[in-house]
Length: 257
Length: 311
Ligand SMILES: Nc1ncnc2c1ncn2[C@@H]1O[C@H](COP(=O)(O)OP(=O)(O)OP(=O)(O)O)[C@@H](O)[C@H]1O
Ligand SMILES: [Mg+2]
Image 1 (cartoon, each protein chain N blue to C red):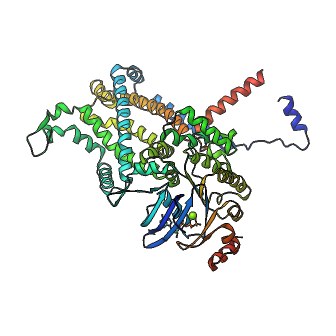
Image 2: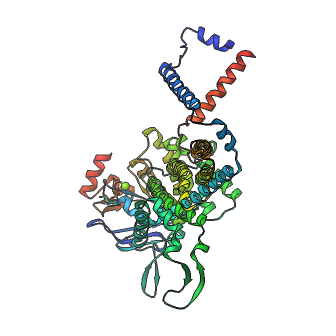
Image 3: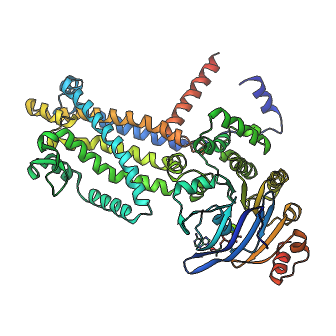
């Protein structure tokens, strides 16, 4: 794929090793502003690791990742790359929202406080503004009546929607989703996908790891199929899902469809 | 019974739920009650105990100021050692090998030696180093030079000993608490752009508190009683005050009973703030109510029922 001036996320030849095992073997990925990129692949193929590298929850062992034109985790100075301080990394992560498979809501805070926590602590927003914005976001994910509830009092689907609202409260440029519906009962998957669909329509740039093929077919602008730490195939949903060229892609699709 | 209740029970398809009875709870409570009553009577009728002395000294001013000193020592040592304990726990969990070794070494030294020895060490530091000098080592630059016994009177020595010892234990409790928090919590906070320090104070520590508070309550109660060890360096806390009085009037048992009453009163008082702290940090977990809550709410509903029956 050619480099693109419009690219919001640019992943180039990224390598990642855990011990002696290389789990990312030179990954490329380009996502333009407003695009939805879906990552597919069997378990252990490195999808989560790639997402975690994009917001520097993992360091990379090779290659480079840029978000919004800025190198993730390193500052270039005089032709060298210097690892960022934890502070600088934290500043950089503000623009990258992440939604986890197991929600990871803060259990000691209400839904509302979960959403306002970072805007208050990181952005130093006035309390009233942060709360007003949080209520707006809760309304957007259909949970306006649940602001005062603790995560333990919410269903999985509701928790994940709060988690999405929490990430949106930082006004990120990009949202990363790591199997956001895999931990949900089947009847709760729809409500979370509906929120994500709306988000995609509103123009949010998204990278989504999912096994929901209908969602991928409908919402994705591009699909990347990974296996064993490498990109095997990529293209439009139509190309990858209905006319896969690679045998491993075909085999995978047969199993999940 | 109200009318609606009566109506409900006469409906044929409604079940009147009878809560499970617990006859053995009542039986065991009765047996225990009798045992305690017997013990109390035996103690009370013991000819060797002069009950008047107990009454006379319970609110004696030297005993009272000893109790105040004990409370002060307990709170001061617990407060400072908790802060230091968070620090040592953080160091021990740190990725920096120098910090984590230092923390490990600290815990090793202070848990490895008897508290009594540490107290004597700080109390008699003047015998080891007659002067304490703050300056730049190996040079003649001196900021402060002081006589050890003047700089560290027994009270300060006692506080240092209790605090440093307690720090080692608290650090381990706090470390266990921090480890109990799911790593996903830290990642979620990081992904929102929170710095490591803010993640620690806003996200990880409050959740760890739920695990930390019950054992820390225990530690506070132990501390309350460990302050009596400071009698070896003549700090005038409750136990020292009692032994001084007893050495004059030779009523050792009575005075020990007096201070036992005070220790029991103080440990009882301590369990109340612990209860509310547990509730405060248990928010969102649906943690079960403790015995205090259950007793209170049961007493409350019994009262209500009785007044309902009357009204
Ligand atoms: N922190 C870690 N330490 C060691 N190995 C790891 C770590 N995280 C991931 N791995 C390994 O890296 C490989 C890729 O893991 P990753 O979680 O990225 O896969 P995935 O594609 O997301 O799979 P899944 O669909 O099961 O979530 C796996 O073999 C996994 O065991
Ligand atoms: Mg994964």
